[in-house]
Length: 184
Image (tube, rainbow, N blue to C red):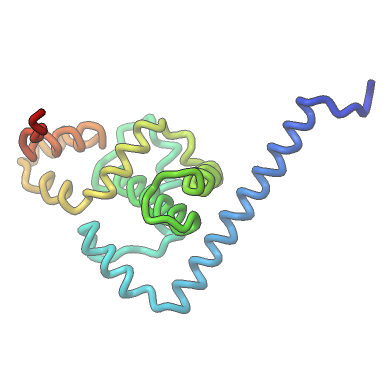
């Protein structure tokens, strides 16, 4: 039965259409963000974010994403905290912020957020990072200034061992002291 439209072929066509729509959505969001930045003097927002992240000068969103994507092929290699992991952390954090803005929410959860972040991750190739690792990288993004300050206060030989985000995040959390448990 040549030319028949079986369910598998139909699903494949839908997936291709959805992927194209997702890529178009990402491109439109990127364009919209660039236009917003140009129209609304993004310096104030960038300054606030710079303080939060502990970075003196934050590059443009497109540059942050480009640097993060450049790290992806080297994920299996020994990456350094100061350059490679930080670039990846910033790219994922910016992607989360873009998806939250596109979803019209201030929390990274819910169906609208998932519908926005999924295509963004696939479009830029960040979906190949393990979900748990992505979660830890975003948690590092949320606490980057504090983590960098804590890591910078460590002796040089200890800093050399504090390289992978999983290690850095767990040791940083441990340095905060024991968690308080609620009494029942």
